[in-house]
Image 1: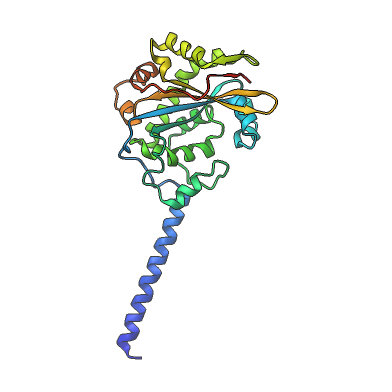
Image 2 (image 1 turned 180 degrees about the vertical axis):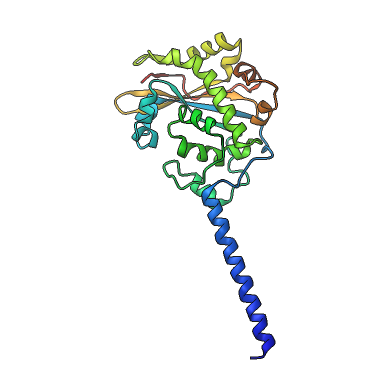
Length: 258
């Protein structure tokens, strides 16, 4: 073999090694923290805040990590944050590589890159979610990447809106174990709290539980797009945002309270 051929082969080998090293490094970075930050909203006309009744969650989904660990039980009888979802519902995984999306779909696993948010916001989320360690990355990659805002702004909005929703819902449900509520009754509470027609943006979801029948499981609140809400000046007002959301039908007319 001529000397020139040896030199070419050496250069090719070195370049190949550099490419392999770069790929390995990229995978390592992906495993440690999220490279996906939202900078432009998907084609979305609204969003939905979804909150779950804690006692129902642990009866419907016993394998939920927050239920299995006892965290949801420790939170007590309260509504907990599930997510803030850009609509329509198929707005998911915007700009997320398929390999990462497949990992993020698993809400029972922990093999998901973390999401960079402040410590104070993470503390707030842990007090409002079944298990923020798993749910924060799952919700960000699935829904937040289509919101048009950063993780800090996205989850900050979810916390602010959930706190205001709980101020209406928790007093209604906390001492109502065994009672039956209708969707209209819940809507009337929102009308009382936030003005006429606010209740039209409230939808009830129920699940069937063995031995209990049809139980109230989740409530959805119809709101404007996340980016539009975050563009507003001052603190987020749930009442103001409900007035701008489209009416929704809901999927459950009545259910028992666990």
